[in-house]
Image (cartoon, rainbow over all chains, first blue to last red; front, side, top):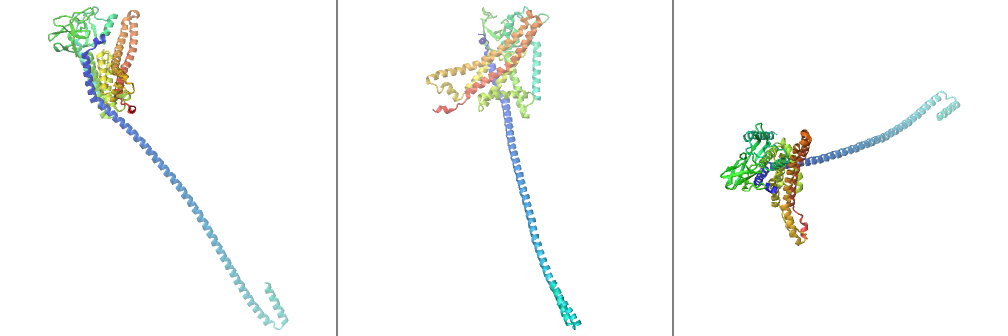
Amino acid sequence: MDIFNDFSIGLFAMQAVILLVLIFLLGKFAWKPILKSLDERETGISDALAAAEEAKKEMQNVTADSERLLQEARTERETLIKEAREMKDKIVADAKEQAQLEGDKIVKQAQATIESEKKAAVADIKNQVASLSVEIAEKVLKEQLANKDKQLALVENMLGDIKLN
Amino acid sequence: MNIASKYFSKLALLIILMSSFQGFSISGDEKEGHSTEDGGKVNTKEEISDYIAHHLKDSHDFHLFSYTNDAGERKHIGFSLPVIIWSSKGLVTFMSSEFHHDDAGHTIVERKGSKFTKLHSKIYELDAGATAVSFDEEHHATNAHKVLDFSITKSVFGILLAGLLMFLGFRSLAKGYKKGAIPTGVGRVLEPLVLYVRDEIARPNIGEKKYKKFMPYLLTVFFFIWILNLIGLTPLGFNVTGQIAVTVCLALFTLVVYITNGSKDFWAHTLWMPGVPKILRPVLALLELVGFILIKPFSLLVRLFANITAGHSVVMGIAALMILLKEDFSTPGATGISFFLTLFLMIIEVLVAFLQAFIFTMLSALFIGMAVEEHDHAHDHH
């Protein structure tokens, strides 16, 4: 066989020695640092990716939180406005009621005053009329004491007029 | 980036220096006239086959091309490599230029009282007393024997070159990480390949827990095979991964790696398969052992060897159509046909270069994964 004839033990030995040395040298000076660097780089990349994912989640949480806070603030504001409005309405209504009452009271007082004044005035007038009547009666009595019938008729007339008033 | 470019410019300079220096010092004239009647040109079918067969073999000098000058001298461009052999007289070293490009056993080199000659890319030591090689009918040397040849052959040179390239390239990538997490320059090309081996080959086949231990082996083997496959496609004419000794060595390394790292479960399931009638268990153990120790490494070594050898043969054969079809299609026609077919094949071969490196590494990882796997023990308790 030609192949067996071609097999060179020398070449085999040289190849074996060189390959061993090559595996050793490359293993020590090339493959080890290369694979280590590649591993480090890959770990770095996956770590960075994980960190980015984490940050994204955190960001989402923060956004959700702020959204929730905003919502809460909004509802609070609405309740506050509502309350304020109610309060205003109540105050206005109360004030109105109070004013009404006060007004009524004043009117009543005024009416009472007017009534009493009127009564006083009427009484006064009556007194004055009485005194006037007395004066008139005096005058009549003084002037016409002679004509007794006529004086009586006059007094009678006058009194009847006053009563009509 | 600076470091990488510095390295590569140095390397380029080194190669240029070596080739230019050796170019004039070694290009010698052919002394022994063998098949040089037409100036050593390769024209016939037989010569082409011989040429391809010669290329597929390892060689003791780095030969780029040859030409015949105006004076009719055969000139070879390339450089010689050191020959290191273990003979009956002990260690012998000399430069391959001593053989003067002779590969037919004509040139005899004498060292330490022994005579050596080169025959079909193998170095033979002549038996004591012999002065020239004598051949039998099948052209086998009768009075010479092979020696243990530790020469820096073309393949060894290629292995060293690939090793150097790998070391420089990946050292620069490793250093690049000190400056930043993203590599620059040549590292930017190499990093995805390292990641590819780790994520597509080692992790899925060996498993997340244990793959780290085998990464140096898998990465080295992957880039080693791939770079040598690619160097083999350059006109430098390397055929390292097509050397059976190289692929045997690679497969044995994988075998040793997965046998020595076999888990308790692996051995239990291989040697005494649970859940099978006891009488069948030794048979199964035998089959499993043969599978793991012989068939799996054999499939690894043969696949790589056969693919690369076939690729080189076919590319060279198609390129040789330029010569063989000259009469039928005229020179431009034959050149055109051969050019486009060779171009097409070379593109496929570039793919095959990657594919074979991938498959070898992938299967190695798969076998390692089988050996280190820890089984779920739930089924052992009933």
